[in-house]
Picture 1: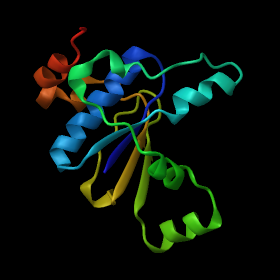
Picture 2: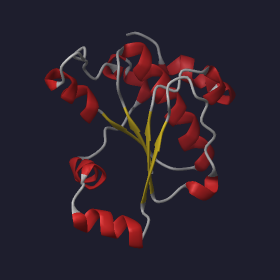
Picture 3: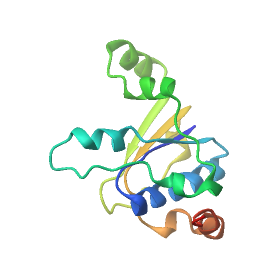
Length: 138
């Protein structure tokens, strides 16, 4: 499972979706979007409040991450941390701004969470026509 933690405005969300879509097709894994960070922006000082904006594109058929998985991924409880150490089912990969991330298949687990902006066409060049087709305004 590929999980993209969305952040930023419409343009940022488009890049994040494109990265996730390309990766999910390459790895033959499901793609889910987590918009938890967007909702939390309303409560963080010096952050611009953002909303989930990819709903503007109905052809994307983007799946939002179910609450059950949000709870597991966001859990910092001792039980969740022990489970992750004993049985690594969750990998979290965070992109540092402007850094190009290469995803190693050996580092992937059952649930792969990606956080970052991924603002490069290099991530989805192989499916760029498909991505552009999905980003059509109604």
